[in-house]
Length: 211
Image (tube, rainbow, N blue to C red):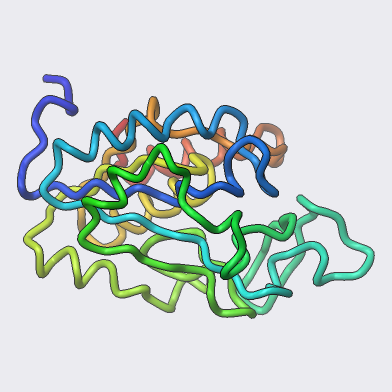
């Protein structure tokens, strides 16, 4: 059976960071990222439960390359909580780039929860469930349990970072997790002998995430 044919009231659609800065023309643009926005809005109509996440960084966030003199975007450094990719300044609170893409407005309107993440200036937050210290919860798991959710269906940006980390943490919290790859796009930066996509997919498969 096609997993997309059997959505139920025990499923939640988690739309990860459908924001202008992650789309072409944005400060951390994901190639073709805007192409998934209208399809995600249509997909949301099939779900009783919808959650949308929103990167919401203060200016000067520790994950910005501009906060580390001599460093460049996509360098990897070690912060107190572990390795951190340094990013171009993006999704700064109150700036236009932090806004949702207009084509995803239908999904945003259906959302029972809009979850802002990455607001702690000292800790990044890829996952919808935990900050990057892997210890500080966002509260999403409890919200979903209260709604009777058993499976998280994940879409949005970017596949190899915020989507994959959210899927891994959904499994960590005991939910089934399904990533709809046609509704995501990846940053795809070099990582070890492969790319960030290879690393993300290997981790998700090990954790029991479905695709």
